[in-house]
Length: 433
Image 1 (cartoon, rainbow, N blue to C red):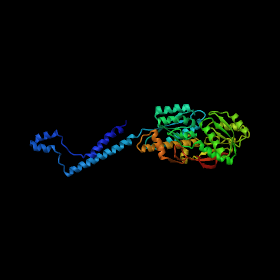
Image 2: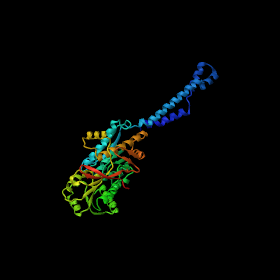
Image 3: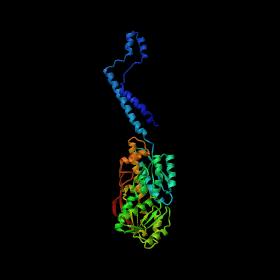
Image 4: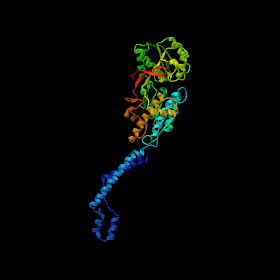
């Protein structure tokens, strides 16, 4: 219990006393006989001594002024006790990211985005003068490791909120977030199951279903009517495959081959040969890591069909073998030039990439929610942060204008084509429902 919590009930009683009962000058009953004896005035004098002292108009005014001063002082102290004294010494958050293993390149970029947002706000004096601290833990891209890391953060550090990455990891910790009432913010994972995984889960990207719908409709009009699918045998890959098939077939397309691969796999040659032998107009690829390895092996197979993919296909770009490929991307802008330059300098980076920008932006959403909680005189807890996000609802920044009609954001989807050193936007659509 804080001093403010302990003092507040007594303070209210004292304040009520002075509001209800003016300050009158009384003599104590014990003092009256002594003064009467000293004066030798008898019973009449004693009676006068035990009555309230007669007050002049001037004394009445003094007492009224004193009463008002006490009431004012107590009111200020009560207000102070419920706000300033409740301010924490620091605001603590966590981030559970794949910092080692096959997905480490993405996880490290995400980590940089989070750290940069925290460093920026601390350079401005923190949240209402309170410094922010971020704790990182390594999920290794594995659900079991993520569960262990989540419990460490909550049990040892008592973090009220954390950022996460990857669908299988986010799904694994979602029940824990519900049970422990910890806000989990997901700026990248897109399996459809995340929409209803936990009342304490906030998704700042649309689900994979929404990207797949946009891409399938574009593909059948502009690329071809037969498709093959390569998908990662994990939550996001399975949902991506299922969703693309649904939308593509509804639009009149036909899936003629489908091949699963495993998370962490690096040799795709047999899978790629099967897809090439089926001779589809294009292949939809839903994987979250090892893009470079697949792109290099595609280059060894003559006549491999055009590839298309979603936001996670970004690493395919820049390879000679993927020239002319397509991908969807959640519309994501850049901060101002000075901010981007500061990021590049701090992390010795060539660019502030998609995942760095998205995690920078998502961290700022958490920080704005924390600022609202403190401004309202509340305590920073998982439920308070979640409620603040949903009350603010619209978070507008150069990176994205994010609206939370539910726990999942709605954002525009771009279709990009790889042309030389550029990814050229060929179409923009609102995410499908």
